[in-house]
Length: 130
Image (tube, rainbow, N blue to C red; front, side, top):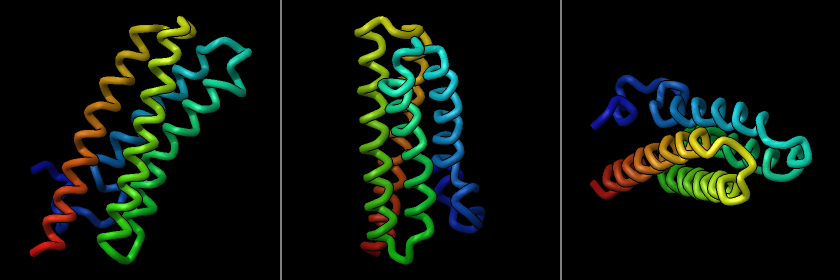
């Protein structure tokens, strides 16, 4: 498993690779949203920014909770926000509002992040079962 699971190396949620990758996704989403038409400022641009920020925010909040069950619950919320983000990005492609290629890159990043989140949830749940 990757370093995001090594308890001895993790002193803060900021040390989690999954959180770091989520923050990188947010940066990309903000840049992408900035390039959308001005009439989307309070529409898809806002929704993309909000959903993307929710992912690392929920990873961090879950990390700060006092139980594994709460942590997994927040990771599930992060996963839901990621799926919401993917839907918004696909919609920009279908409506031809932004760069199709940039949206595809963000979707690929989101897919990878989703796999990391699922792996982290499994790891936490397995540690509770022991």
